[in-house]
Length: 403
Image (tube, rainbow, N blue to C red; front, side, top):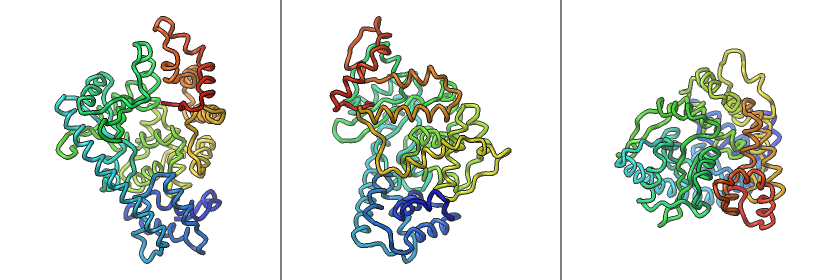
C-alpha cells in the first residue's frame, strides 16, 4: 500500500502499528504485507515503541496475526514473546466474554426481551471469522428504552450490578441521564467483567434507534438469539463511534478498514442514509482516514462529497492517532481544554446540532448528582451550580471527569 504524506512523517514503529492494526481480507493481504515490510526496512524500528503503541491502540491479537502471516518475517525474540503473550491474553478474554454473552442472551431470551449486540466477540466473528482477534474491555448490548428496566432486573438476577460509580437517582435525575447518556455500566459480582447496556447511540434521535431495530437481522450466538445490525447500519455506527472519540484508537479504524476492504457495503446508499440522520460527515471523515492510514481507495460517489468536508474533521483524528497519551479522564485544566476542543470538533461533525444542546451536554455531569443531592423541585439549580461543582471535583483531584 502506498504511504501517504501523513504516514511518511511518522516513526517506523508507528507505521508498523498502523499496518498491523487490521487484518486485511485476501484481496488486500499482499498490499498489507508490503506495508509491514516497508516499516521494517533499514532496521530502524524500535520494538519497545511498537509494543507501547500496540498496547495504546488495543490491537495485540490482530497485530500478532498480521505479523505472523508475512512469510519470512524476522521479529526479535523479546518482541515476539511479548506479542504472543498479549495475543494469548486477548484470546482468553474473548473466550470469557463469549461465554458470558451466551449466558446473558439466554437469560434475556427467556424474559422475551429483544436484544442487539455490537462490538465485542460478535463483531470480531462477523468481521474476521474469529472471536479472539478484537480486544474488548466489556460486553456491549442494546435494548429498546421501554425494555430497559426489565433488562436491568434480568441482569441483576444473573449477578450483574451497576458499577461503583453509579448510585440511586431521583426521577428528574434519571430523566436527565436518559437524555444525555446512552448506556448503563454493570460489573459482575463474581468477576472483573464489565457490561454496557445501551438504549441509543450518541446523537441518534428515537426514530433513528427504531430504524436500527427494524433493519436488523435475526442471528444466533451459541444457541441464543439476538438482533444484528445490517452492514450499512454497522458502517454508519463504526464511523459515528470512532468520530465520537476522535478515532484515538487505531483498532476502531482497523474495523472500518476491514469492512470497507471486504467490499460488502454500498457506500452510496450508506451516505444517503447517513444524511437522513445527520451523520454524513462522520462517515465521509472515516473513509478519508482509511485513505490516509491504509491507502484504501475512496468509494465512487456522485459529486465527490468528501471534497467539501472540513479538513479539521480529518486532521484532529490524525493527531489523536499519533498521540502516545489517551484523552484525560480526571478533573483538571487539561481535561476542560480537551472537552472544549471536542465540543468544537463535534460542532463541525454535526453542524445541525444546536448550540443550546452542545452547551447542555458540556454542563451535564452525573457526578454532580452525587456531590449535591438536590430535590427534584430544585433540579434546575444544577445547571447554575455546575462550574462550582467542577471546581470542587478539581480540588479533590481524585474524582473522575466522567463516571
